[in-house]
Amino acid sequence: MSAERIADVRLERVAVEETFGLRQRVLRPSLTVGEVETPGDRNADTAHVIVRLLGGEVVGTGTVIRQESPWGEAGWRLRWMAVDVDHRRRGVGAHLLAALIEYAGARGGGILWCNARLLAVPFYERAGFVVRGQPWDDREAGSTVAMRREASHSTGQARIVAREQLGFRS
Image 1 (cartoon, helix red, strand yellow):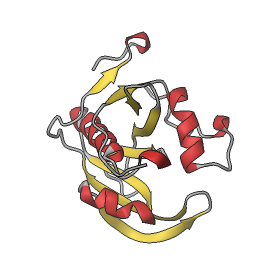
Image 2 (cartoon, rainbow, N blue to C red):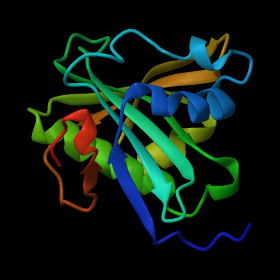
Image 3 (cartoon, helix red, strand yellow):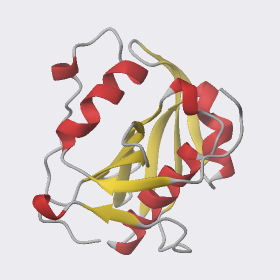
Image 4 (spheres, helix red, strand yellow):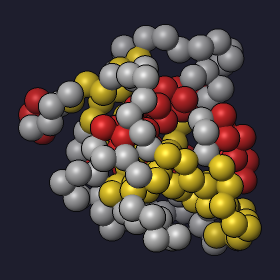
């Protein structure tokens, strides 16, 4: 697959179940699809966002959960960021991350934090995240480090299309 950018995508806020397939396939292949649900996934203000190509294929997913940071700061936790291997380095992840940052910022902001795989640290740094603490070995994710940034209302680069049948508003 070429490394050209993907322009024709939709960001959609969806029910958590719509994220399970990509979560499992990209991030936790040793688990079953039913094992990738985590605490907070069903909270009312949690957002699950997918990136869908115009043809319907889901190529990215990410979640933000209102959760205090490990350092005691109010804010949001970024989880389950995944981009299909055939669509990486084409802007899908950056587009998705911008939408999740904006979602958290529009709902009070605070700290946005995540546990990032070491290979993904440069991606998050480009989005304004900074490393916090020392790396550790996560038995499922591998070498990991905590990262954080402010979740302020941003530029409006990404518009999340809400699914009416789920009762969300964009």
